[in-house]
Image 1: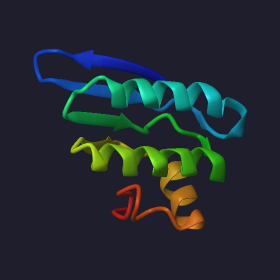
Image 2: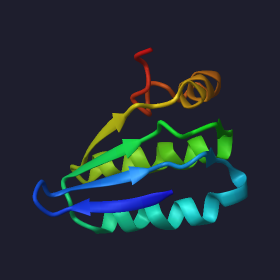
Image 3: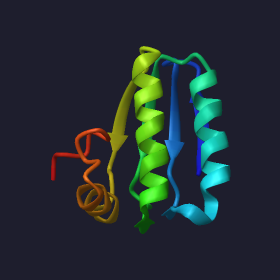
Image 4: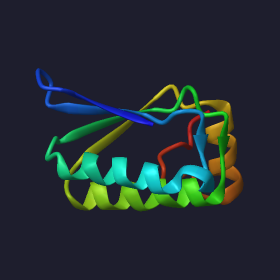
Length: 102
């Protein structure tokens, strides 16, 4: 997972990486907290590379979505992978993660 900031648009982009799972939950959590602390009003999540997502990773994303929305931050997905969409559907988190389409 990596984060980049676009100062011209006032947004942050987060590349989710290949694995959103328990094996790297600590690292993911820190990066998501850093993104929330940045005070940028828009965050783009790039989910194209996600090959595996488990309940722990998706629950962390769900908490991130709730926190971001409560702070008035707008979240947008860029190319969520089929694996990410399937895992969110199986865990019942598609709606909360705005992954209902497709």
